[in-house]
Amino acid sequence: NLVGNAIKFTEDGEIDIYVSLNPEDESQVLFEVSDTGIGISKKDQKTLFDAFTQAEGGLNQIGGTGLGLAISKRIVEAMGGVLEVDSEEGEGSRFWFSIPLEESEPVEIGVVASARCKVKAKVLLVEDNEVNRVVAEGFLQSMGHQVVMAEDGLQAERIIDKQDFDIALVDINLPDCDGTDLIQRLKRIERNKPGDKALSPTPMIAVSAHVFAEEVERYLAAGFDGYLPKPVEKEALATLIQDVLDGKQLLLPQSGE
Image (tube, rainbow, N blue to C red):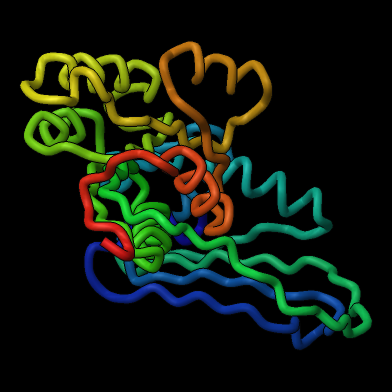
């Protein structure tokens, strides 16, 4: 969340991420994210960690911090730390926290076979968060997939109207719509396309941090073919794509063809 906000509010300049032992107490690990973005006024800093805070001036032109900072603060406090901020309006911001971590004994780790995705697919990735988008794209490309990205529902509709895909990964919480509503429109677009897509629709996977049983039931009832928890892990992503697409005729040439 801290890194995502830094990217969101820094159009030019740089973002630095540091992890180190706290020099004042080596049982504490210090995490710090700083940027040269638009900064936060002293007045707005007083309520920054409240839910759905929007700062005056520059911040509300881009969008508020929403629940993210409030949740981050609670998580840090639950781990025994304190989330703090130092910022000057127009100059940038620095967020940091320390949490206590016990030193553990070295553990020998055997070689773990990485879950490899044998199929090569054309993937539609619908994700508005830039950090999540870059990470998922990197995972997918490293597996040999071709990735086309959409940042919101409208862009996804325009893309799927013009292109065919083997699989779609759809974020549930998009800025312009809910993912469960979006796939209804995507499926409708495919049904109206000429060719085989009407008979063989693209499998669509819900991607969300909210994966309690009742939420997963809602995704599947809406028409999703599966779900993937956030934060996305490469092994889980590879396994899911392999399971969904194994044995199906795909758009990309496969190994051995």
